[in-house]
Image 1 (cartoon, rainbow, N blue to C red):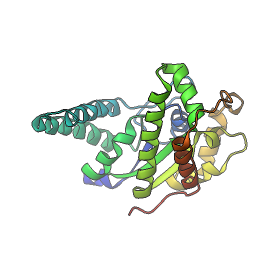
Image 2 (image 1 turned 90 degrees about the vertical axis):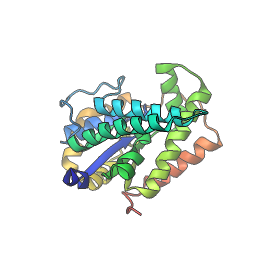
Image 3 (image 1 turned 180 degrees about the vertical axis):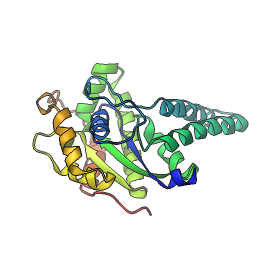
Image 4 (image 1 turned 90 degrees about the horizontal axis):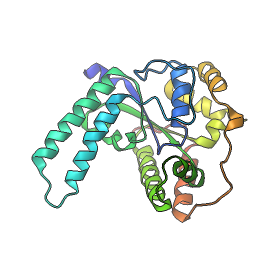
Length: 242
């Protein structure tokens, strides 16, 4: 177990609807181990490549959070649920090297600081206006709901990037017609050959089908500020663990 914990574990995090499934498809085709059956076709309308154990772990994590936020938290129950969540995460990260989930941002701390795995974060982000349109078309709900989620996830991602070795990639550069520098950074960060990543990206990404959904602007000062910070950090390949 200790040997597996010392191996690098790559956690692909983001809000969802940001290209994390597309990136996972590229990594999987390049040889990354997600513990899933290899897939040659990526469906851009359906998020995928999420291991069942990560959903189980997050289920128990969310139960812990609900109890912690209650008026009279039951600490025995919290401890019991935490133990189950830890077992799910430990089993998953012992078996696979790459994990992707839209809830994974909330489990990074547990994986590194509670369980002791050597994790590296690959954060995928997208400008708020395109994100909220994509979210609303798929799930409905309100503008305020999606703004709160986008800010919470991306502020946490930015915090993690200051502390944990991280690579941040934008949706726009992954699907960009002439963008290739992100492949260089991803190759350096993961030690997967650039040739494999480039071949997979060219095979999978239909660049003509990825363009801005609408020219509507739903940004505010907070979303602009957070997006600009993420974009600035994206220019770095990684950081030393502090």
